[in-house]
Image (cartoon, rainbow, N blue to C red; front, side, top):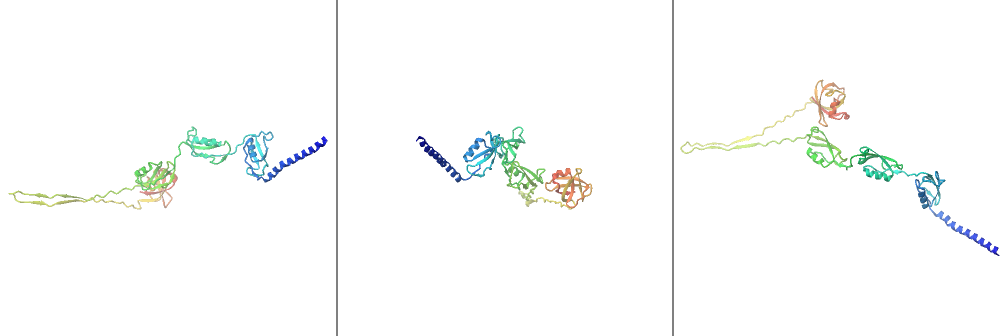
Length: 372
């Protein structure tokens, strides 16, 4: 009876275990079919603890391959299959390639332009990058700002990579807006530029002797934003005021009267009033007319020749000429001792030394007036 009692009990226990296992596995199988695919997380560069946490949160399994995978002492992940972002089934298994050393993801180069040394150190420390300074003050560590960097801001570089920066000793100044100088005199230009960090360079009549009286053209144009301490080029000229004509002066002499007393011949002599009018002197201005044979306007160039000597195609040898640069008003004198082969607008060839006194040699040609 006892054996008979235990046999049905064992059968019932077996059935209970089988039924309970079916109840426990059935929801999981049904649940796996109802879950949407999961995007593959990016675990490249993560440590073992970080990988376990990420994969557990996304309910994914992983299998490792590579150095340290068999001994479970790997340090970081170097690659993953499938790639990060790929949709994978819920609770599926992905393959991770491991490494025995830490792998750091690429770093993005921060923008260092214009930053001071303190701000550069803070930015590069946060990005886990190094920098190598070159330029003024870089050897002594007294530079003030960064004016150039390589690679450019935003470039992806390896962890702990070095960024080359060019430094400067000056500080950053805001841009200045060019004022209007057209028509202003020298005194007025000085007053206008006094409150601005701008320089001026003059060219034209009176620029070399600083006797110009008016600005007729400027570059850059008024209102242009330029860098601090920029030089403004102004074309100047000399405008002289005509003297005022004096008004006529009239002088009236009072009358002279002579009277005789009693007993004397009565004689009265009266001198009529005398009026003297001073007429302003007549000013005669003689304008010398330019004769076409006394000057010629054209193009001048230079060649390797003796200073103080020049070449033309229309003047005789030995004549002294005066060459005026029409753009600046500068002039030089030279003696014609050579003949040039060119004709037309090219009227004179100067020596290198003489041309350099009028304009830069790199300019090549200038418009001049040759008089003799």
